[in-house]
Length: 111
Image (tube, rainbow, N blue to C red; front, side):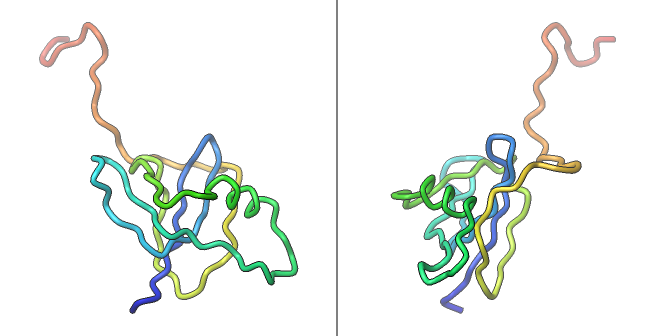
């Protein structure tokens, strides 16, 4: 299947970004996922979505984007693309667990 397409949702600056990419891989940078070949609506679309236009300009000239694992919400392989968009972060979104960092002054076994 040469024309794979992925819908990727992730949190960025307090908002949910939903973009479409032809390639999603585990990154060489530990704890990141790489998105390549982002796909946006065609120029022939009659209705222009302002959030998609903002995403187009934000990712203009970007060949590869590295998204932290803890920011990912979902990755779906889809048959057809849709409109990339930025949405408000609503509801209860729980990020991936991060590394455990003990509170200063605490130690294992100490009560």
